[in-house]
Length: 47
Image 1: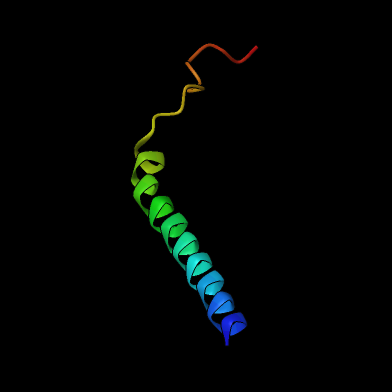
Image 2: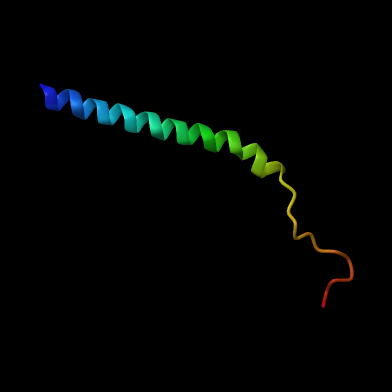
C-alpha cells in the first residue's frame, strides 16, 4: 500500500511540474511574439 501512495505522489508531482512548465511557456509566448529582432537589415547594407 505504501508503494502505491509513493508512486501516486511521484506521478502527481510530475504532473504539477509539467503543467507549470506549460503555463510558463504560454506566459512567455507573447514576450517572444512581441520582441523586436536586433538584426533588422538596413537599406544599403547589401555588401
